[in-house]
Length: 252
Image (cartoon, rainbow, N blue to C red; front, side, top):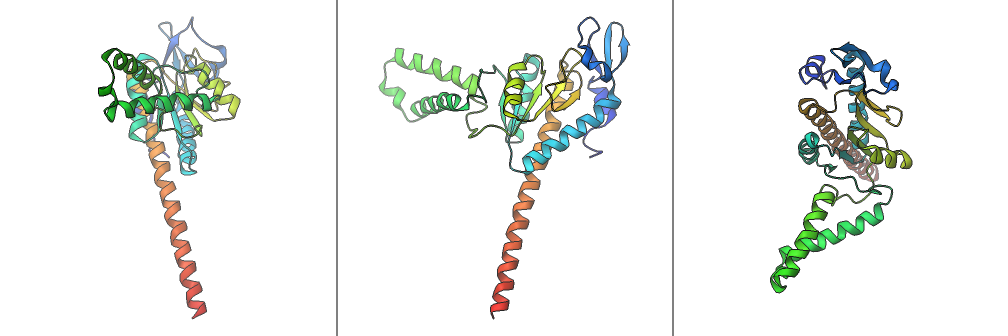
């Protein structure tokens, strides 16, 4: 676990810079080291072990067969949320959290089915049989659905965990996960309420370098979990083969 993240990496990414002292949540007091020039400084001695704990939890969840949903809709997070979720083969929401995205997943699945139908129509030449006005209308619908649901269109069931950048902005996503008992891993800045977060990482949720670091490490954790999952499957298969061979030997 020691190599997951280092103090130096946190410092270089500016993870320790919080919000202005006039914009804070008193519940974050124990994670604050002090203030400098009107800006809160986050205590990285507390962030580091919590980051490692969150990493470990993601590894465990994925190793057990769970999927992670990356959530971050603020402008500076959008690219890294999508990029890192894709890299580790997980799902993402980086434009707008639709109410009921996980609490009313069956309705969301209907919208996903509509998106896939439109994708098929575009790909199989159906558009060529329609008048231009109809095509323009259908394309507009497809693009809107793709924008909001593209990152979850292959998600067959509710995620086993959500990873959030800026839990204040993504309060609805956090509340839905809480309601369903889905663990929430989140970057929690000095202006946020840490109470709804199961695995918090006290840190800067605005700086691009910090966001990139958080997203890439959680993606690494997911990849590590996938590797463990495959190793377990292989070990189970090997055991079955060994037991079958033993039974054949006994029978002989």
